[in-house]
Image 1 (cartoon, rainbow, N blue to C red):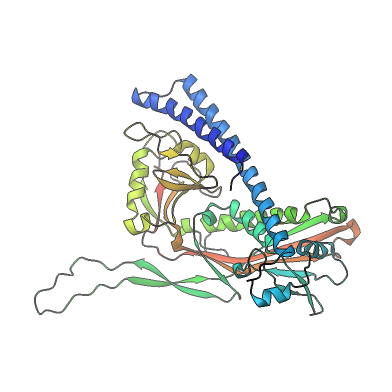
Image 2 (cartoon, one colour):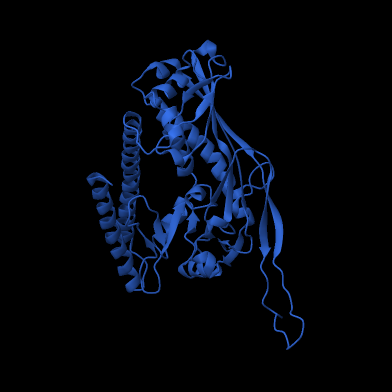
Length: 421
């Protein structure tokens, strides 16, 4: 449950939006552009909303981390009686999971030098996974909150990962071949005379190949930071590794070419509408966005994974657009942690989407469940005390293997293309 602080910030955000909306509607109702004074007041409120968004994210993240920590300690100190027998047996000695993970990070005697971090929801808030040390003997148990933090930071920098793609998690990195639809059956010419042979029309298929491209980051941490028990080392490493890998993987999931990297959804998406000459550097207008929405057929448009996606600056422009009744088409979320809405559909920001300039494709809309993201196992996390021995630094390496491809290329996701002039 959200705290009073978060709810207060959310209420303030909604009040600011109502004030900004009134400014837009006044100008639209009078069929004129906003005056410089109105533009200044509008942008001032938008700036305050952006600052509140940042504060809200910080408050919600802190509350979530606190809740996760409480849940972890509750699970360690008083394990549920109905937990599976295997998990109870593995954890019956009441080990301190965070202390054992910190032992790995410090490189204590007998601690492993690598760990494969894989997520498993079946055992409750903590995943008790036996890890193997270099000698091949069983060592420590791993709390899932470290994995969850890594993945959370990876997702937070990638709008695609927030838009509900289909995620395939495989144990091995062998090539996967998945049928992809390139054309549906056509209804033309299917009328048959009595007793005549029924006509046929087959959908067109091809094979989409999912590989396992490697993404990694090397982190150098001072020995003093590791030895200082007052430092949230686990959170620091999770944030740094998750964001670094997420930035590169997220960029490729948008615009990857498919050669030595994933095939980004923008590479396979089709153009739903091309804007007319606007004189506004290619920015989409209200009619363009409506046309784009309805260029996606109803089954995809009504999917729970149907999202708008654009970069932050483009979304800032959406806030100023009104419909034919002078109502803003952008709406703030009424639920903490949920995305804002554009024309009634969820809208997520992705920094890797193309910018709004002439001839670019800055906006995408469609069913992102048709975009498959493949992840091999989890994230491999390793340490080395020898690599930076002369500097008294400890090296940590995080590696993710993954891929992505749009499996339905008949129009599940479509884009707005800005005019050439």
